[in-house]
Amino acid sequence: MLEPGDRLELQIDDTRLLRAACRLYLPPVAGLLAGPALLRVADWEWGVTPLLGAALGLIAGGLIARRWTRAGVPVRWRWLGATATTVPGQS
Image (cartoon, rainbow, N blue to C red; front, side, top):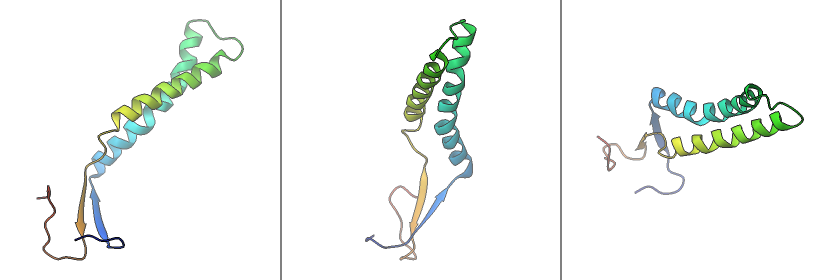
C-alpha cells in the first residue's frame, strides 16, 4: 500500500499535456487581446474602456479555460516500491 514518502513514477503523454496547456493558457490571452480589439471595432475606445475590455476579456477567457481544463490530463503512475503491483484502471 502507498504511504507518505513513497516514490512514484508519473507518465504523461506529451500530446495531451500540450493540449491541456493550450486549453489553460490560450483563452485568457485571447480574451485579453480580443476585449480591447472589439471595443476598437465598435468605436468605443476612450478613457479606460480598453483597460476594462481587456480585464473583462481576461476574466471571460479564464472562466472558459477553467471549464475546459476541469477534466485534467490523464496521468499514468506506478509505485516504485513494488515490482509487480497492478494499479486499478491501469493496463
